[in-house]
Length: 330
Image (cartoon, rainbow, N blue to C red; front, side):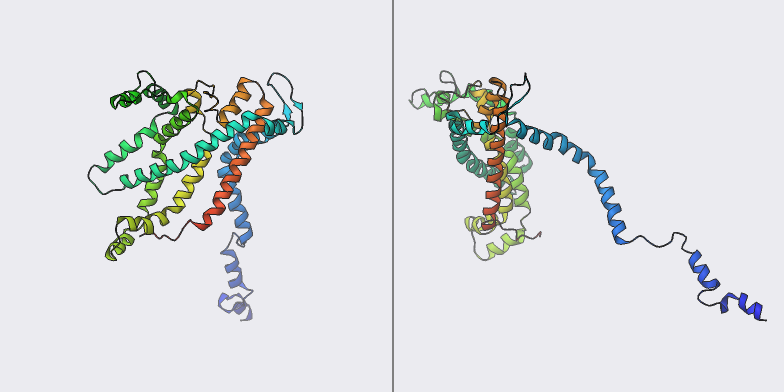
């Protein structure tokens, strides 16, 4: 009797056959803890992004570090680098052509960036209108951005030719004399600034995405309250576009500091007349590949990097005063 009762699983205690059956039902054992799961997920994530990490290390981190190291040397590319300490930076501070290049670049940036933002925003508003054939209009407005900078530069050279260019033909129709815009130190900078506006379609697409993210109900409520188009733009459109404006502003400043292709082609690589189109990147390029001063060019590149980083941080800090992120999808 006692042996049969002991063998009956219905009368077995927690440590008996019932407990053994429960233990046998979980052959995998205890579940891993949260820390173990996080480490496993981290390893999996690192595995998936490892190609990107390797690319960044090879194509960004290493070249930047190498350039910084090279900036403290005298190096022509044909012989071993010679350590000169901070001499390249001292030379750059005293170089009058560096001051000229910085002045030209700042002149370009101060005019080209605000003008580019204005043109891009105008194009975006036009592309956001609810009219027939809007897709065709968007294509037309964006198409100039697809033209390569070197091709557009050659077109502008012909367009602004002082003898037979279309620009002077129009001036002659009104009785004006021929104007050699590319032969004037200030005129060549103005021409390059105007040329850059043909690429405003890229920023316009980003503005357009921001415009389409603004809930239509806000405009409807504003119209009910009697707000006109100008009031709607000032009170709704512009404030809610400030995050997009911040992005386009930072990318625009970055591009302005690196202006090169248009100036190089228009001036045939000289930066003339009177160094009027000698921008910072062109002077850096001439030192590296024209004068074989790779160490000095690296120092100029490091200074440009630091200036761009400082400007980006300053813009980001100032953006706290005007950027509005209070928009909800509707």
